[in-house]
Length: 198
Image (tube, rainbow, N blue to C red; front, side):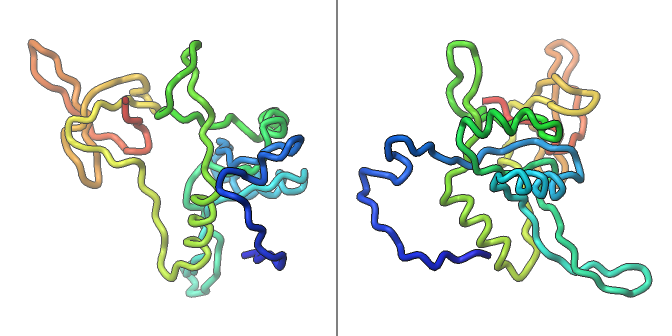
């Protein structure tokens, strides 16, 4: 963890440092990369001069031989956080190993039906990094909580595009599709393969 030796700069509450004329604001964007390429993508971005972060935690793995080894375990598959200006982001998205940047589906869409890009506030990134660096036990990530009756859509796998309702919570999520005349069909599906419909 890097700790700056520079003194704290007091900024009036109505002004941000990034508001200075001619100083582009850097934001934490979220990019999708290939599975198991998160750390390699981070290294490539840093080599190109872009600040990037992968949510990882060091853990001890015990091999069959009994040998112990500390590894850097990726906690959020396929995701990398990139701290860039909008102009830099438009260059980064052209890189072959960057698939796309995530959008914020909870925000209002524009006239063309497009949602704004997802941006993680600096304060949340700082808390995440602090927690991962200092936690004594493994950190786990869960998707936004789903509740009985929530409308959901399948976004991955052979059922992509299917919409229905959550009918049970727990380790597995059941998706229910109601056929008014025949009853309800249910299927168990991974929470990673679905999104909540607003």
